[in-house]
Image 1 (cartoon, helix red, strand yellow):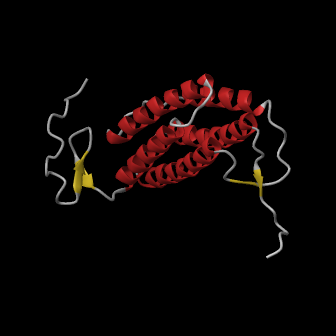
Image 2: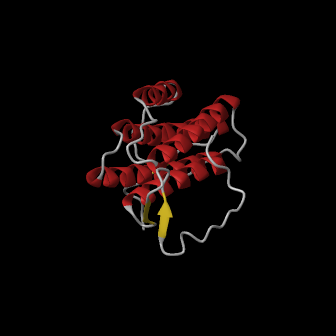
Length: 183
C-alpha cells in the first residue's frame, strides 16, 4: 500500500494544481480531475444511499460498487493505468438482469422519487451519468480505458432498475411522468 497521510493539508495545491498518482501535477479543473471528482461524488452518493435501510443483497452490491468506484478513481489518478475490466461490466449486467426480472415493463417515463432510498438511488444515477460524461470528455483528449466508460454506463442502468426495485419493495409506486397534466 502507498504512503499514508499523516498530515492532511500540504499546501501544494494552493496554486490551482494537484498531484496525480504518477507524481505529475495537473490543473485542478483539468478533464482528468473533473472525471475523478465526478466518480468520487458518485461514490459519496452511494454512501448516502447506503444510510437507508436496504436488503442485505443490495447493501452488498452497493458496497462492492463503492470499492470498484474507488478502484476507478485510482485508475484515473495514474494516466495509462487499467483496473476496470470487462468482467466488472458483465457483473453489473448480471445484477441488472436479476433485479429487472421481477419488475413490470415500463410503459411510461418515470420521475425520480418514491421512497427515500429510491430517490437517493435516482440521484446516484444522475451523478453516475455525469461521471460517464466526464470520462467520455477525457477520452477525447487522452487515452481512457473503454471498459471504465462501459462500467459507468451499465451502473447508471443498474441504479435506475435498483430505484424501481426499491420502490416496489417499499410498496411505493414509481412516479410516472404525466405528459398531458393540466397546468
